[in-house]
Length: 326
Image (tube, rainbow, N blue to C red; front, side, top):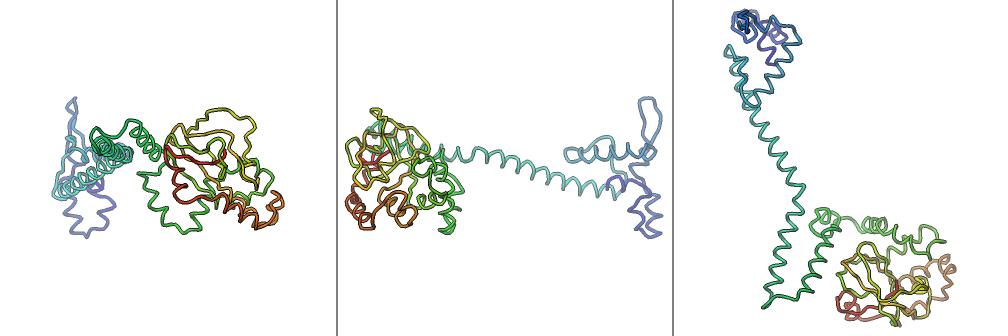
């Protein structure tokens, strides 16, 4: 546009009337203004090659977006109005671009910054909730668990609010897709069709536990199978012949052969034995594969091995005792 405005005749002037065209031709234009070089020779931009005029127009346009280039000044009223309008537009576009770039830059660290601010408030609360603050061990466990939730995007993640409004069917499918790679590690499912993992994921729970949580205790009846997703576990002794299939498929009580606790904050999958037997027994092929007998036997398992709400609460307690198998 700047190049067409500076030309006595251009595509724009073809739209003018005869009187307007005559008036336009007698006006001064930035392309017709005489200029000099280091050797004193006079020349005008309209005399330069076409490609050189185009390149200069691009250079001038970029220059006006920052400051007015000194090589060319508007020579008539129309050119001055165009430059004034273009400079207002350039300033606005430049300010918007800078704001968008700054906003994008801060978004990279926004989640971390918000988490650090909230953790600072948590640390202050732990120090001031009583005289002398809570114990260092409890503070470390709480901080480790908070860090675990942040790393696994269970907190300070914008997608959580959107995923909560999904219909139950989609939430269940998403849960299956997430747990499927870990459920396939169970050797008892190696000979079953892929559909089996869908049924098992329906009765499985993904849990986040703090460090020090007891998952299974030696000598106690095993009621569930735990599968580690993230974190580390610790065991007081090594048992070579510990078998997961004995826990889930044996209708008789299975006794845990070792005590296992979480060394760090961890995310695990919990498969309840009674629910596993119930869902596998509801399909004839799976019931025959595991040699489950009757529905009455399954009901007996659910009743005999069940615990009250107070006992289940111990699973999530750092100092609690949970009976389970690995």
